[in-house]
Length: 438
Ligand code: 0X9
Ligand code: ZN
Figure 1 (cartoon, rainbow, N blue to C red):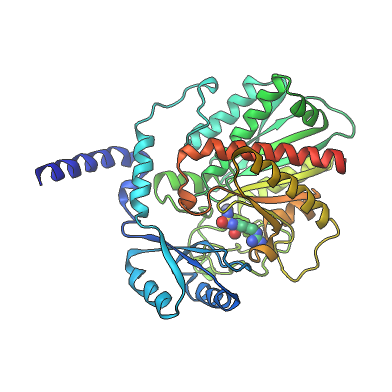
Figure 2: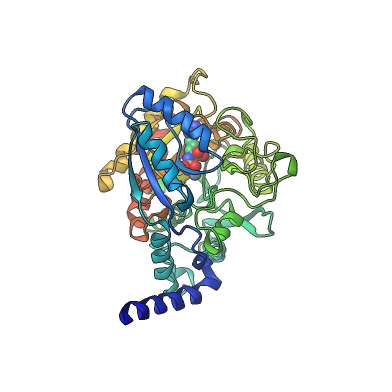
């Protein structure tokens, strides 16, 4: 008893100590669980869709209902609703289980590990195997540009709603009149921490391998310049570190006529086929499309920057990294009934090369396909804009690890394996494009 009290006291102190930095001691997810519901047939899929429509404003759907039988729906249920949701699922004979029984416990454990760590000071001490707060990511971008000034330059993309700098990098080892380019971005969804971590790893690996004369990377960089923005939704990312670990959207307050909540889903705010299916007109939704396409300063700044580059160089590949569920997703995103573009077979063949490369590294399975048909419809989405707005024939959203054991709370020990397999995929894609469709 006394031991238990002492342990709780100690834990409370540690939580308080960390609270200033991470804010996680608020315990807002106390009693929350992630419940996984798995469809067995088409009628389950139909039921899940109705369930999603009924509850999407009250619950956080980590994985939305998909078109595919047996692909699960994961939903974060707060303590106050667990009894109701279990009752609904049982009453409708749905197949479900608790996937994460103690969400707050997982978060506390992860923040506590991070709190005990020494901060890196310089680029050569930068630790790619851990998650970094935003000021360290921003500093990393600046340091990369300074340290590798011979082949890397850094730039300011724009300033966020809350006044933070969003910065990016360009890797360019040579210039030529017809040199084409590649766009890599991460972190549009704040809570998907493995996305910026993976993009930073890939960037560093490209530079390191080029300087070590690795032939594959030398060939790729001789043929393509690469633009990289590792953390797009910078305010949202900071908010996940300080206040709500599972925040997804931007942080701009929205007009009263849309409900007056905070934040837009950046991945429903892109200006291609904006405002259609799979995007909410309601600001309190996690898939709020925004009042207008590019309503968010982050999105406007990013697309302005990228489009200006597209005037100088043709983009061939666009990758927007997300998590989770291990997918390589191609156009179309906005409508499952839209006829697939003539480029689709080539997009699929390249995605096949990417997932084959992933499998070869750590044996992980990633599934690929046109996203609205494979998964669900999402208008105003990055990959459709990467394809039609930016003009990159090969345009993807990648959902990184895992398959749901931790979901957005992916432990740090999976960052490097995840990044390694996705580095292999990025190289395979660039090579596929260069040799099949230069
Ligand atoms: O919904 C999204 O924006 C992406 N999933 S996430 O869990 N990272 O938020 C997936 C978009 C994929 N595109 C379509 N489903 N059409
Ligand atoms: Zn995402």
